[in-house]
Length: 479
Image 1 (cartoon, rainbow, N blue to C red):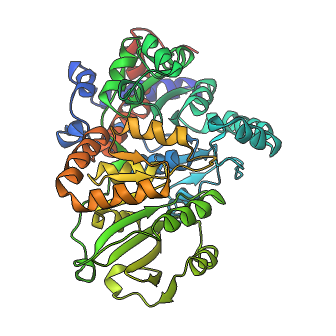
Image 2 (cartoon, one colour):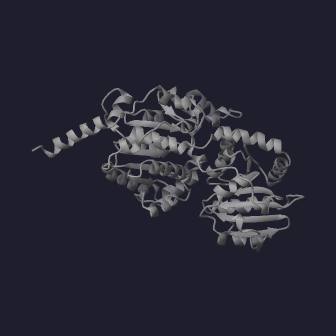
Image 3 (cartoon, rainbow, N blue to C red):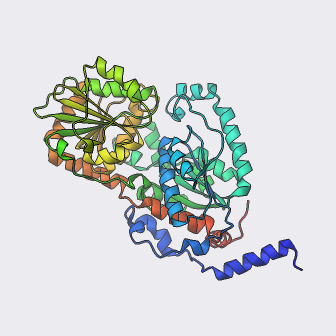
């Protein structure tokens, strides 16, 4: 009788011989040189069920922020569609992981590890005060608990996928498992575009990448099987430093479409308001955006579409709206799918929680103090104006970097008067809107990234991991 250990070895060998090998060739490495999302459009036949055994341990995803949670969710949904039998779990390093709750209720995703809201909302790198507040709120202890959770779960999964920046990348590397990294926040467009005279711009120019040497070193680990970034320019910068980075598409644009507005809005000018989702900053920003429009003159009705997240709530917004002189009324049509409607002169304010995906395609211009949602809006070809505040997230520095990343398709305004003037110019000039919108679409890329990233994750991290690893590095996997 064979020993249990010998039986497992023989089973593994037989499984490998039965499964067709998926060779990594030049075309895979060239995918980073194609237009974003193009690889997904020409996706080759790939039978994931043939490559993933029923006993597969699965994948653990690490992400560190609200925008990163949304990107991770898109990829996880694509993975679940491609390989329903694959066990998927996620460890949010920042916040409470609310983006994953519906998937958890559906039963195909497991949320692991401790979580807690942070005072900075995950933007402690934006200011010293934010970092101090997070430390005092228990950030070091929370990170230590999450690290211990990761070490416990490492025996239950095949690999780790990090989504975000340095923190999840380091934790994935420290797990001792094969891992992949999807670098979401950094792009070389932030220092290649614009004046480029700041000290940070000179630093990035010297490196030829916004990513730092310690990040290159971690991405270059023998156990790192996949590095994907948001655009081809950034991937090219990393490849100069020996990191085989790809730019297979942008998951942030999946599920978003330009749409004709409902009949009830056809005669209105349509402006989307994005105030963010982190309290109390989101409520302050909502008041600032609405206040800036108090003296805005328009000869036709102006519809303001305020698409919110779970925060700020309608209850929190009500006293602000009454103070600004708005009056509550029923929404003019069910097709608008608005939770609340407020009127003031020629301005109609519609408020809807979770309505961004539906309302964004109706807008002509955006007014924004948000991160991920602003990028998605200009990616649809809709230019935006921003109004930076005190933060902790949407500061003047953040807004300037965002504008340079997006090629000027979002323009920071220093005052309410400047915002009103620029808004009038955009609404009156369709050619200017189209010009800025084309830049935004080019910088963000088309949809399709989630499906292609899911394919790469299965190919390089899950299916036939021993073969994939040794083929990529030309040697056996090491620690």
